[in-house]
Length: 180
Image (tube, rainbow, N blue to C red; front, side):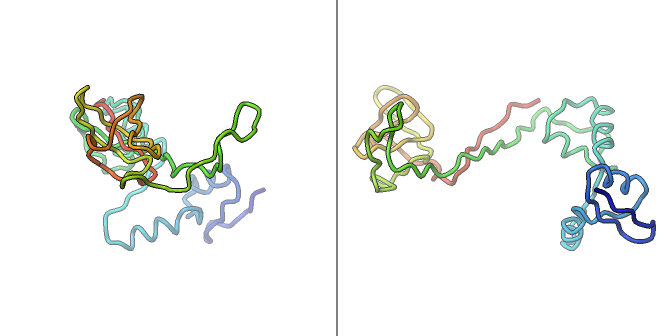
């Protein structure tokens, strides 16, 4: 459903095609403009651009397609030369804080073993990123606690005396992308 508006008054976009039509005619949109106004109120330079302008800027500069590169090519103020060879963006993936399952079930859905009530053991929690230097080698990654003095790092069991916490769990996984 669309609403017909005159050119003088702002138009409320109620469908995707109507929003594009209003943008083409130069009418301000209410959809997303509140965010834009709040960003402008911070006093920092804020620019907007269309998807077509972003693609144009990216193809002229012969850059590969990636979301983080598109963010640098959004508006008219994109520099003529972007050096992205040494840039490694931080990738953030939402992993959550676990499940609310009360027990482990078998293939038929019957309870097999109940979950421990405690959320931590020896100061560590599932999802903490640790580095372990053991006689068998060095391991780094997220741990899964089991309520005994032996935690899981990947597919290896490690005693907490070898572990050093690098990052507490916060519901996200962080990694670096290779340079483009």
